[in-house]
Length: 388
Image 1 (tube, rainbow, N blue to C red):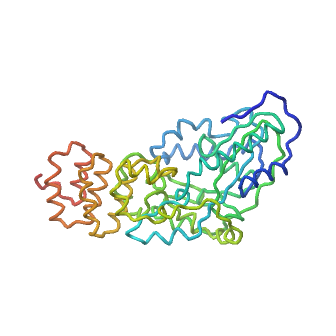
Image 2 (cartoon, rainbow, N blue to C red):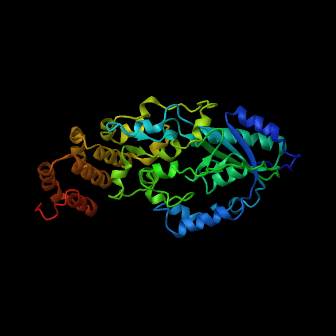
Image 3 (cartoon, one colour):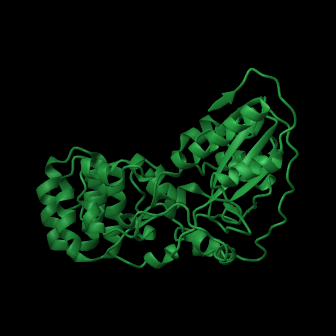
């Protein structure tokens, strides 16, 4: 959003004062860059789109022209103030991935929505820039076609690792990024000379092999995409690989060796809600829309909606292979949402024996009108030749 004044610029921006203001707002990393990161990020974006690695995130294609360069988004921008907020967890997120009765919600979504938190801080800093120096500013936090990670690298906050996320010597892989575009010309900070060396930890741990090569991501295979972005059914081949991750995935971030340096100076500022740390799958599966909204008030999970969230929970339940979950899965075979019914049938197929599965199929498939749901009934146990 723009914040501006009709006054002309009132002198050079004092970087030290701005840095102090940002730190006072709770940011952990502050850097300055020209509103220009060259052509390479745009070329990577073109390759990503040409290979259709964006899945059904059509907005990436629609906004590609503005995303490929900061000044394509705002031609008047001269400089960018990049800010990072540490959200490193107290406990290793990988510790929960084997707990079959519990789901894993990505660290960033376990507390209040970071968009709201960071945007308020950015606006206060931006108003200070306009008040003290004039000019125009715009603030962004993952809400516009801005390639924040290349800008953060240019501003000296870190470098992009092989997992494509920003890496910081001080905070590892755990920085929320926000930026302030300004019409002021501010002397850029020096870029960080960082490297991942020969390390492949983030690439090798990925459950779905979403990295075709170092520094490349195929979003179609990424668990964060599958559980958050896609609005359709999750492909059958991907479901067993998701495990108990029900909203996002932190594996490639959590395994990064640079995190051990971050732990020495980490101050946790965004506290998670205890009920969102490895919640019980049985409790989540029975959420109706009102209960879902109540539980996730103020959380980014709320934007997912009840149906897609329960879809994710059912995939995790199916992966548990625990027949004790049949009591919560069976009612969802008749859920009003096709996206829930498909996931429920798949989970039911993982948990029930063939006799029980056939009984429920015969009871329900005859009145099923959704083709994807009918197909799932046949595929989950390979019994398409049985009479309904």
